Length: 251
Image (cartoon, rainbow, N blue to C red; front, side, top):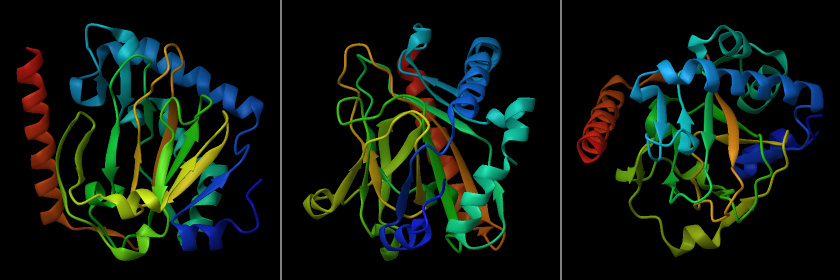
């Protein structure tokens, strides 16, 4: 069920939580296909589509991109339930980008630096939202999302290269005021949080010994959006440079 106040809360805070977004059967279907994709497809993917904390340890898989190359996930981009929520929040017809999967494996130092998604997307206007669904219980111990309330109303902040593969750019002037205005988001499997493309957010490492923090996400952009190609080219250059640096360190 989508809360009646989802749209005003999203507009005000830059994010909104939808509890039990997927029921048990829908969640099970999604998890079965994620597990199939990891088991059957991931071993054959290029490095840019599957990121590991340590590539010699499959259990440290931490991020999957471009999942739309699989027929199930290509079709899932058009799921009416997800699309309905995205169009409510964005306020126009939307298009879904390829699904992604995120994990914080236990026993790994994998923080998510503070960033704004639209710094990566380079969309104008910023009518874009990320819908992030918990596949595990998510809390402060295993790396919950932390949002700076209302930060989507103040534009894109300065970003620079990070040392975190999969999150090539992070906010350079993230400070105490941002931390004071953060809200932590605690989720159960099937709960979803949707955030505006310019909402500042981050996540701590997973500090547990045995619990994963897995999530499935899709980005939806309004049909009025266009991409700033010059800004996007600069971003891609930074990503390629980061991947080269990581490859040189692990080769």
